[in-house]
Length: 374
Image 1 (tube, rainbow, N blue to C red):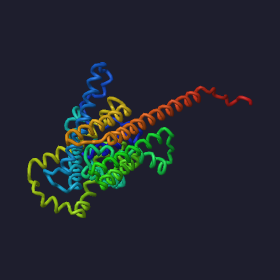
Image 2 (image 1 turned 135 degrees about the vertical axis):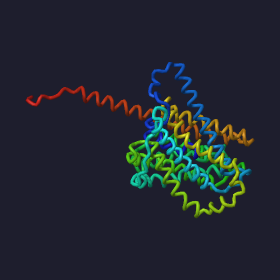
Image 3 (image 1 turned 90 degrees about the horizontal axis):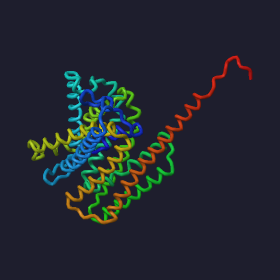
Image 4 (image 1 turned 180 degrees about the vertical axis):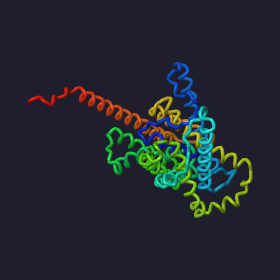
């Protein structure tokens, strides 16, 4: 729907680990530990393939809806509004199915609570900014440049963690961020040299990256309001988003644009819109499932590799010529992002090991008798 950034809160909000709680799926999925090695390999292959397929397809479908010369639809906010509406409807549908057939569908029971909508609202404002700027970026830049255009999320994560959460960052992580920034600057330069650079697209990409980072921070604060259930958060977030988009559609003049759109009553248009909405909902499920059957680190590596494949496919599909320096910019962005993931994972593992050792040492201390004499 809005690329992976829309559901990146699922992994970034808790250091890369996403709970499988509330994921809709067949009963008995918790018994996956009894699978043989070959069955696990097939399962992982299918899940990773599904993640790549849904994620890449979503970006190309969105690009078609946002800036296709066939559609000629200049209503990015309406596209995003409709996709949020599809997510709300699918959440409600799964909630009903979980009541009717709980053995087949596992999904939280949704009951609208106005108090929760108010508590989620600050996150929803950031969420609307995130998905709006994300789609505006995709509308104004090519799919091939899209990865570089939205590559500063990791950098903003570091900056906001320090300024808001007062968390320091290691030198190794800062070096990885420097590599990402270098790749971003080189990519913008090379895109400009090719004559296809949209400065507004770059600005939208930067703003989208900032909102993705803010989204992760606000998600941490809001999750307790929905019992730490990401599906409930998705529902209330999209309900708020649908309401917030209504005045934006009016202000931006998109209601008139949609009214005068010559393909408004065609089956093809609404089919593509609905497919994009369903795919956007699916990416939330597939992302969580990929983390569940592999690991947060493997998920991030898969995402980086997927971005690389997506870039190559876009260049081939749109028959674009890119210089060696342009490819180098992508390599720097993807390499820096992958390196940052590895560094953070190593640091978190080391911190965990130190905490375990400290607790073990504390438990090993002999208890002093209350009657002992010093």
